[in-house]
Image (cartoon, rainbow, N blue to C red; front, side, top):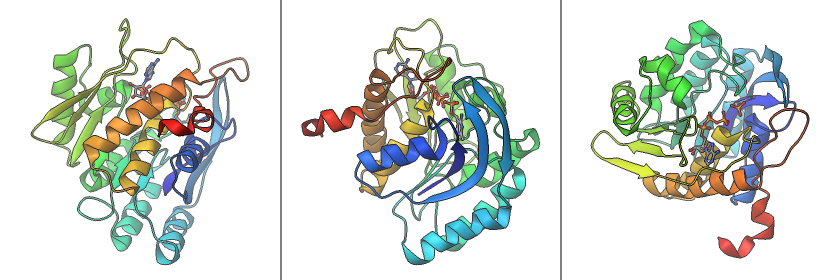
Length: 267
Ligand SMILES: Nc1ncnc2c1ncn2[C@@H]1O[C@H](COP(=O)(O)OP(=O)(O)OP(=O)(O)O)[C@@H](O)[C@H]1O
Ligand SMILES: Cc1ncc(COP(=O)(O)O)c(N)n1
């Protein structure tokens, strides 16, 4: 299940999650948190869904269909986060229960806000202690910890600081590390570090990369893989999806998990 916002451009948010879920062999259920007005150039606005409607979507799915793993993306406001936290508690989602991947989405790749500023505390205070894994990018790391990640040492320091906020595991994504030929992500479980590296794909079309990574991780957890295995699977998945990204509109096109259709024998 994905709990996230809708992207009218179809590149990120629930649209990206559902594409990856389908192609990794899991059925995707959805709780929509917000409807964004968005294209390849940016986000010009969004309407929040009423918190009780967000919570009701989660209850409707968990009380009938059931979930094997859950991912959160754009959560928009503190009131929505609080309603989701209560719905997750009632359904046994998070930490020792059903695996929960929290992608702490704060802004789009263009810098447009997807979370009202006052909601950052609710995101860290309510979602992080519940999370099996949190997957911040470097801007979100800076917002949450004040740490500027510029190399492996600061990436480790940031992972430790984020782990203190309560999640079981932290993945500090290195996709925004400038001037690097590689895209190193760092996983920390409170004891051990594990690095996931990939050669940087030279493309401006990287819209939805973070969602795709978190959705592939969630799908692998739903299939019963461990967190380190699920992240390894997702890292390869997102790298291939970046290679298959295509131009759309005048700005940043979407990453595409559709490579999977022409390479089914690879998995
Ligand atoms: N050009 C690239 N080549 C290879 N991997 C990349 C590239 N850009 C991002 N990644 C990888 O994609 C995943 C998403 O990382 P990123 O840091 O871009 O997250 P994000 O900002 O949440 O994503 P986005 O804003 O693009 O949706 C990570 O595994 C990262 O290492
Ligand atoms: C609904 C929604 N969710 C998430 C993102 C982040 O994706 P990106 O960082 O690629 O803009 C987005 N733009 N829109």
